[in-house]
Length: 576
Image (cartoon, rainbow, N blue to C red; front, side, top):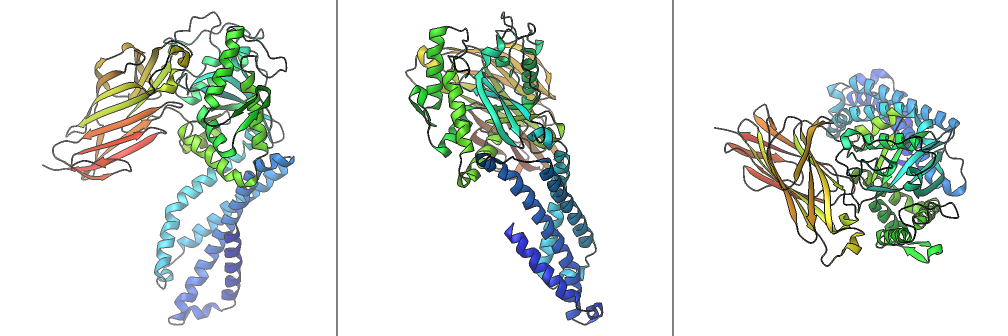
């Protein structure tokens, strides 16, 4: 912001000085070309500096909201929003004027300084992205009152996922809460037991599980479908809408602006930033290292005392069995409100990274806001990209807390022929990561039961399968999927092997070929990816994306922990 202020002052002073010189001097040899260039370039620089300053004003106003929550600030108001809109319009006008001036530049205006041509080229390169961002922000401003609770509070359904009991959406929803925003600040929040909602007397009627989730073994249970089982889809927008529907059917009364889901990994990162949080009622101090163990210990001790029936706690904080988790949520929220300004950049970085790793998933009912998540690929939907790829989704149906000790490795060996068709041999291996465990460590059976769904390109053809009990196949989200049931006894390892093909995996573009491959990451999962690509005998690798290692002119591989959606590409030529 200060750099833009300084630039604006410098260019304004320079513009005033240049305008004192008559235009006739632009015809003077040598000196005239520089003066003419200055008269064209300086107004453009002024517009860009004004746009940058207005952008900084918007960002600084919005980012001050969280810090303001600690000093009883009223947050963002409608008059504030009007000012922000005016700043956005100023950006649009300044950019439009700058573009007009750039289009009037003559080749001679750039000749006296070699760096000018490069800067103008970069301006042209980044301009579409800047304009797209401004257009998106314009649409977002129209729904900011609904998203941030400006004028009228906004309520979000927050799902607390237990990734040690993995579900397609990231983990079992053992706890939930309603977070209320007023002016962009959290005004109230409380974590409570999903069983209190699912078994509530306010539930309007029995909800059967949809046929798409008939694989779920508890689909015929007496309580029907509830919030705790709403995330049976790896496509988060779908699971989020299911969660909202069930919240309303089970007696929820607040109008929802969206859904937020968080995994224990996000809380662990938060604790690493802020330090331990004390829960004095239980004489416990929670750290990033003992978070999961303490939650399980106190939850399951109370479960042993009360059985599966949820008993509301006497102080109104959740149920007896999940009282510890509810108190921890209250103390964590208080810690957020008390964060010093020096830690805010670290918090924002954690939130941004967690959006990429799906440890923080967000769904907005306001489509302008949801579209913005889609543009930046953080809406956590099942994507249907052009090219090849795979998405392996696990669902722990034991039930148990076994996924804390279980790693999944996806080894995909791809052979591409001269026509660009790919044959895959995909081995999905399950390995226990810790020896000497018992059913007590799993809080359930040592026989792990899993439902696995594998998403591949829509035109894929399954040739052979082994290692699981095939259950279903179909098209969803623009992709072909195969589903099956898999069981594994501790401490043995096991694997599912699929052989399948996809025509047109690689595409010929001009005189070369391009192979694109997308690996999607399941929220809450521990997956390792090993991709091996063998190109046709005529091939020679020309270029690979980051992380891909070319072993020879026609073979390449990638090996990494799959912590977020990852796209790779291999460009190659084919002669002979």
